Image (cartoon, rainbow, N blue to C red; front, top):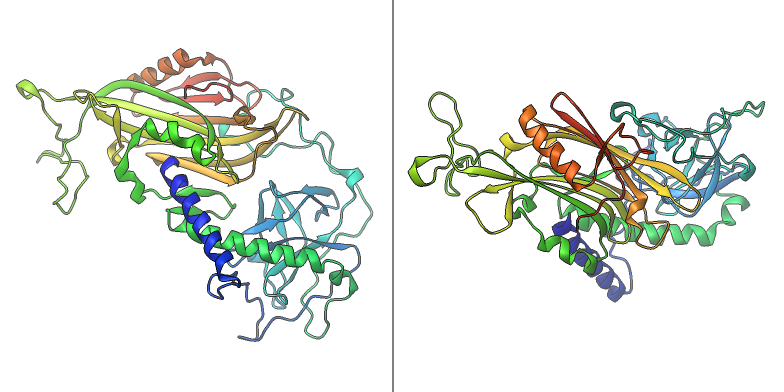
Length: 442
């Protein structure tokens, strides 16, 4: 992530400078709206927005939803849901009907009926306005115990769903004859702001795509399994330079010696970088003086915090090097060295004492599992706002114990890891589960 963000910020900055210098948008660089019409290439008609429905965001050609500002919206269950630019919002693209309407979006697990207006060149989203007095309250940090990784989900509410006799809002199809009424016109300035900001976001996304970022169906950004950055391994210099590019994160470096260094095919071989095996199917190890296999040094590094000015997330990286190598530069783990990893990421607001579940990644066998969502700190550079509840599976109990002991040395204590029980760790078979919030070894 350190290597990616340095280049990403440069790329995004370059895109912004070029856009400003052009004086007008390049048609190929602007947002391409969804074609929800069923009549081929005909331009979509405008939506007749009913009274009580408000403009809250937009959706781009990749089905990514962007929320602009803080809004109170009515859910399909009749409750008020607070939506902001930090909410995890995804379009229910499987619910397209013949008329071209999106019937709902999902906000932190709650379904909200919506309308879409493609007539202005950007797909604008409308929903029924909720009542701020019905705002739901997130459970306070400390009110839950022992959140399990396999069942961790977005925090619930302190009150049961409200019972209401109000009819549920339903999506209104795009009209083929009517133009937007006065309700839509009230949002003319906001519509233009959304169009401009969406174009900027689109250009940023194009820059990120060039740097091996992907986005899943839940709007979570992550890196590919075999990105081009893998060849660079890891060096502590990457962390030292991170504040210069607005990356504010905590990190933990766990080092231990276990196993032997695999012999890899040379760079001029078709299977370069892969482990070599003998005729019996056993891996071949690099040897040192006396023909003895060279022992392997491991670095398992954890990161969590703010990446650039617009992303929150976490990373777990697996790296190795020969024990005979004095330089503290590690190489990215090969397939045989990957570990099964998973984590849940939360953000805690120390002022309101509320905690929000941001996303889940894994479980997945990986050398560098990552996850990022748009967001920012509530307090200036307070990286302790990010809580990570994680699980790492090791191939043997011996290797698990080496990692566990080093985590204890770093400051973790035995306990029941959960979002409300930070700096705790436990083991189960060959896996280690922990909750990390405050420790920083940078």
